[in-house]
Each structure stands twice: as structure tokens, then as C-alpha cells.
Length: 240
Image 1 (cartoon, rainbow, N blue to C red):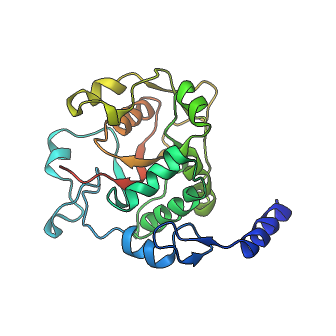
Image 2 (cartoon, rainbow, N blue to C red; image 1 turned 180 degrees about the vertical axis):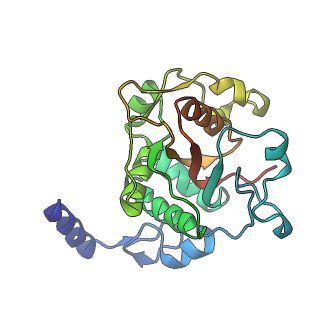
Image 3 (cartoon, rainbow, N blue to C red; image 1 turned 90 degrees about the vertical axis):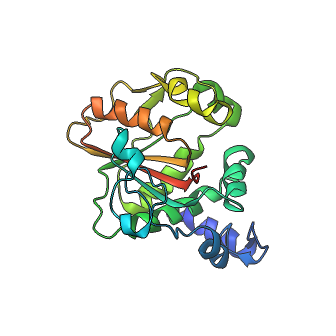
């Protein structure tokens, strides 16, 4: 592992990369200036669903979460899912730009630690892909983010904690009113995994839109004994 790390640093020194947004030479796929300009959260957010709220409502659940409480307890996000960040997410998700995953994990770690006295999860798990989509893509972008996030936070990773038992249609292609139904019953805690009784779980994903997928997962984890579920998502789609 040490030799591998040294090799990567050596290759990086010989072949410096360019920022995917501005083209500036940098060791990261997105330079510091662009990270601060486009991937730094500037909103006051509902602590539960991470939708923007007024400054006077800081630390309070928004009206939607009070009216129809989701199964998850909190959501941490690094930035909005908006240009130009949305293009980076798509490059990771569909273009195999795997170098973006550690960068996104770093932005997410900064957002999580910026919450001050927030309690860190006991373990992390990625949102799983179905077998067909995993074969088509060759990787799970949520797992690619979860690995470096786990290492950076010193929190154990349970990469196979969850499994997708129903190969659902992609939420992005489903009408908003049908999204909750689309993922109902799609997830389960895999056999032989760690005991969840009383534990706090962080669920890692690249984007949160309606929140129905994460709500369904949180319900599964809570029924398996989890005491608290926190969504850790790189980007949050602004409400329309």
C-alpha cells in the first residue's frame, strides 16, 4: 500500500492534471479556486432534507419534513446540483471519471465537519446499484465516493450492507409523483452483515433529488435496528 501511494504521487508529479472546469494545472481534478466557487455550500438548509430555508429557520426542520417526516434523520450536502457541478456528477456517473470521486468525498467531508458538534455516523454504506446497472457501468459511483470518505473520516465502511433486490427504473426517468412507488421494496439489508441495533448509519450517494430513494433506504435500516440515519450526498437538487 505504501509503495502504491508513492507510485501514485510520482505519476501525479510527472503528469499533473488540469482542472475540469477552468483548465488550470492542478493535482486535483477540480482546482481549489473552482472548488470554492462552485462546490462550497452557501445555503442555510433544513437539517433533515437539506433543502434551502430562510436564515431565521436555521437548525429547524422545514414545513415539508414536519408535515411528512422522512425515515432519515439528517442530510449533509456539499453543494447544489447545478451548473457546472452537475456536469461533474454526470462525468463520474456515466463517464467513468473516477478521479472525481475522492474530490467529491473531500468536499463532503468538509461539509460534514463544518456542522460543528454534529455526531458522526458509526459506519458508512453506499446506495447500491442493481446487478444489471452495475454490470453495464462497471462501478458504483456511490461506493467510489464512500471509500475515500470512510478513510478520511476514520469511519468503517460497510460496502455490502445494503442490496438492491428490485432492478428499478432510474428515478431521473420517472415522473415525480411515481418516484416513491418506484423504489418501494427495492432495498434490503444483505444477509450476514454487521448488526445495526442502536447504531448510526451514514448513507452515501452522489445526488439527492426527491429523496424517495434515501427515504426508502432509511426505513429499511431503521427496521433493521439503526438508531439514526444520515444522508451524505455530494449535491442536492434545488427545489423547483
